[in-house]
Image 1 (tube, rainbow, N blue to C red):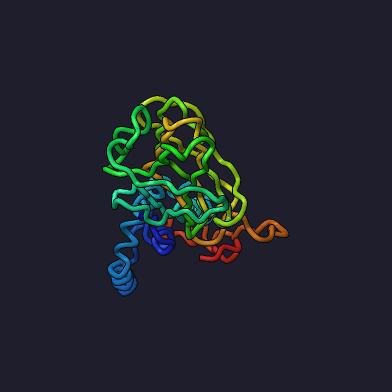
Image 2 (cartoon, one colour):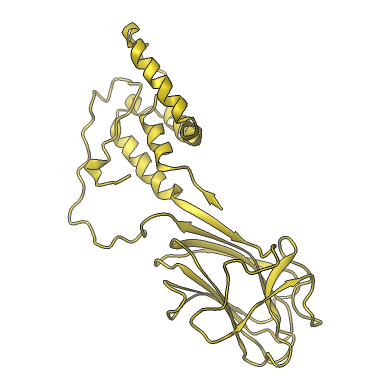
Length: 283
């Protein structure tokens, strides 16, 4: 699981010293201030490292040199905070188990099976995993055809905003595979993606964005007319939002007021001040 750089790392980058080509030399009387800054830097060394790309970007485009002052800092902070507050979950079943996936969804359906190498039936299913050694699949030998339902579900701690997965649909009597989403795994889901028919040997991949505040993903499969309909799923990667939902509970009643620059924007300065409270942003 990967969690992006923290909010303190971003605010540290915005508040820290940024190199400007036109910046005047520091006054000789600032020795005490320099020592205090050095102490703060030592305590937040990890945050400084995480924020280095932001520092480099702002160094190439000094706000003061361009006359934008704290407004540029606000724009950068809002856009970066929106992009980094995410966590990524990867499930490839390589422990030989389902992990957090299970059969507790909306439908009354059969469970998927963990497989390795090829499935028991000939002329259907993958010959090996897409990634690693294991995958999840629906075994459609008798009595699991025709039109037998299978499902596997996972509930995420945060809203899922993007998902990528690999799928195998090899067999002359393939059924229909769907990816569905819902707020909880017990409610009627929304279909996000569907595929049916023989897709040939090998694995395919699908990637798409998700909106709507969904936290439960369901792979739902209805078998075809005979046993050559083994469908397989592997390498599921879901990116979720961290924190409040992207959809606010109430819309703002009026546009926020941008803060005024605290200093002459035409004069190069060694720091940038950003008043997040004026924008109604809580860190």
